[in-house]
Image (cartoon, rainbow over all chains, first blue to last red; front, side, top):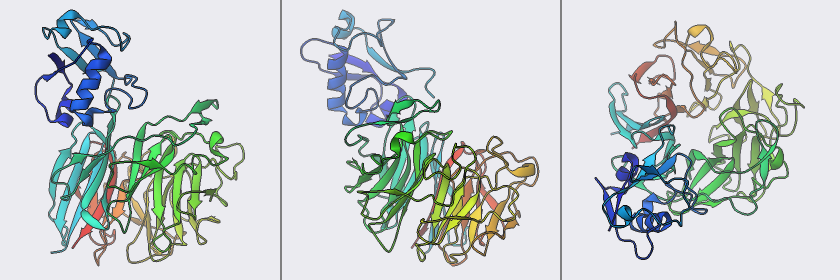
Length: 98
Length: 371
């Protein structure tokens, strides 16, 4: 079980409150988490990453375990604490965004 | 009972303002999509309870929201805007080529006959159409593939397609306006396009009367006279009597012919409205006096309308999509300002009063006349 924290606007859009819990099969990577998130909440497609290129939107950041993982490869394994559900994966709107 | 619903897009959400036919008391609802920048909200003439809105943010990109109950509830529909075919390049501000990149939807234009059909004008400039109520979008790519497209340059707000005018007598004919490329017209439902800018002069471009490159701010047409078009350009108020084949200036006695919106009276095709702005770098009313100018002669002779509008220390702007009319017998005219006021007149513009004073900066205003 992966815990994902979404920013307010995306929580509203997906009609969720608090953390989102999703199952990811196989290796827990940024791409796998976002694929699972978008599969469960299709309305989030295009809001975190580009619909086609899957490139992260410029003013969105990914944090976990007090680290900025935004520049990591989308196929890099996320920290063990995230994979174990001990720490959440944070999707954050950058402070410069709006 | 007859009523009016005014749809307002702002920098931080959308609002609906409703009133009965008297238009004295207003109910304000919103913000819808609070925190999202709503460039436009538009209602379907074929089904006034069907509304489309285009919220976006720098963080999370573009959404399209649809309401089927007049704005009481909203659901996100499709937000996939993919350029069709080769992306190509246009010119950037510095004159170098730059690939087309989707940023946002500036304007939504629902079909006058089919509630499921709606057009969307994009930045970077392109025209999209949905025929399934906004669920899926397809580009009418002939426009962006026009031979002049590699030379199009953005206006200050971006390379945006901001105006879409359908000819009510000919479903194959559509006009669009792009800043800063100009007006384009299709006569075959959007497959092929040609520039419609003859007669425009713009001093900010190398060839002032070039076929393309003009910063057209807004077009307006009266549905009973689709061959007559009115234009507010970066500078100059213009008129065409031949469906955009040629234009002539009708700025006349305006205190400034710079401005953004232009609107036509719903029952008088020769009555038009503009809001003069001091200059291209001073986006506020001349002398700090907010005045709507009305011409009852199709241009050239203009009369200031000031009753109820601030006549000192007013330095707001009125953006291109932020003026509209209703179609009640005594016509209502509405506009919103960058200071967050929405003004209404229930007497053709003779007198004005604010409906609401303290919204976020207003980006767009549309008026629906309800049965």
